[in-house]
Amino acid sequence: MTSVSNRPRVAVVGGGWAGCAAALTLAEAGAAVTLFEAARTLGGRARTVELDGQRLDNGQHILLGAYRHALRLTERVHPAGTQSGLWRLPLVLDQPPDFRLACPHLPAPLHLLAGILGARGLGWRDKLAAARWARAALGTAETPEEQTVSELTCGQPQKLRAMLWHPLCVAALNTPPEIASARVFLDVIRGAFGGSARASDLLLPQRELSALFPEPAAARVIELGGEIRLASRVTGLAASRHGVTLSTRDETSTYSHVILAVAPQHLPALAAQVAALEPAGRAVARYRYQPIATAYLQYDPDFALAGPMLALANGPAQFAFDRGRSHGQRGLLALVASAATNLPADWLDRAEAQLRRIADPGPARWRKRIVEKQATYSCVPDMVRPPVHTPHPRIFLAGDYTAGPYPATLESATWSGVQSASSLLETL
Ligand SMILES: Cc1cc2nc3c(=O)[nH]c(=O)nc-3n(C[C@H](O)[C@H](O)[C@H](O)COP(=O)(O)OP(=O)(O)OC[C@H]3O[C@@H](n4cnc5c(N)ncnc54)[C@H](O)[C@@H]3O)c2cc1C
Image (cartoon, rainbow, N blue to C red; front, side, top):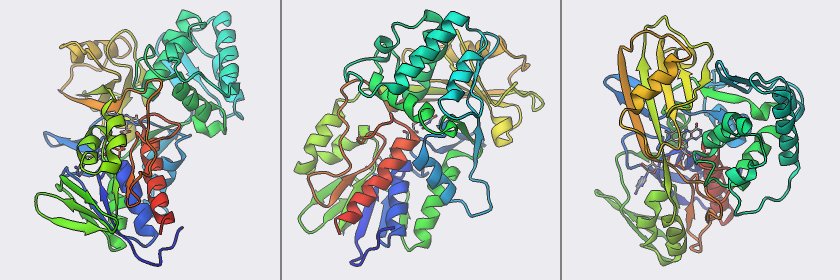
């Protein structure tokens, strides 16, 4: 941990996973931290929501064993001896009745090879093609920056693209394969399958998202003397050589340093106020976004899916999650439609019809939907992702969009938050 002799007064703007990771890192290093969050809840795009008295998430999330920073931080903020709230499962992609791939706990990449060779729903020719492709993908050092995932997988049999590579692309990058960056996709594949066997594990939250990391991180910041200001949107930003002044509706204060940990869609308005931030603001203003829609369906409490997470085919939703198994919310399912542009008006009915093809849950007691229109940026080739440090020595950036190997994920957000705080501390 970096120690701070001359105690800086740092404002963190944004209380998503990146802002909370930055605030925690700074507070633990001895900085005086004030975190401003525009909403009434911490967590940003991975937060708890209350709908008609039900405590849900704004969208079902999954993590990979390769998400080292997100996992480490989540474990660290929960007291020793308590569960971190993440349920670790070996990777299984189960799309009943057509397809099942399960990676056993063998050394990597044997576990992937064994998973592919043992997959249900693929002929031997498909299995060999998949195994050869995976081997080449794990060994390729360079990928053309402009290549898309569709182009990358064009030599693979159609069935493999449809059942394996393209669903993985949508799940990991929330971007359709026709426009998704092959380089980032391969980085995720290598991260998950190229290291330890446990890197490909799936981790399902067992707590609501705000309680998983942002709220305990904020509690720790307060314990260390910091402040968390909810419902405090920062609208004004002015910087000099000596400090950075922030304005909200209620106050104007000057800090020695600022970390802007807002979502990329909110950066340009703040960046336009400081000349040194304009290039980053302009780069990010070019991003396009992808929605994610989540349908929550409450069935009879005795109903359970055949597994905690099943893949769905031939409709708007790609996955069904059993919240009874993960959160103790018996009979509650979450159906997720990623990269959900052009969702039909009756998508919820269609998603439920997908579920009924693989299970018989009886009539739904209630149904709720949450559509996050700007869930993540489109992870396309040639994206400009700014670094965490800016040309202004007192202003830093954090968020899932800053330069890094992974797409818009909790890993990118937390890694960026830690990196941003560490870069700031190094300047002291
Ligand atoms: C429905 C959905 C499903 C997803 N599924 C997954 C998944 O399965 N796995 C995964 O790893 N990732 C997933 N993601 C992506 C992941 O949630 C994001 O990458 C991550 O949460 C981004 O965190 P962040 O802190 O960078 O940004 P944000 O969460 O957007 O945080 C920015 C915060 O800044 C605040 N803010 C903005 N402007 C201001 C201002 N002027 N003043 C003060 N505060 C401000 C916002 O209110 C927000 O709380 C999903 C996202 C969504 C929406």
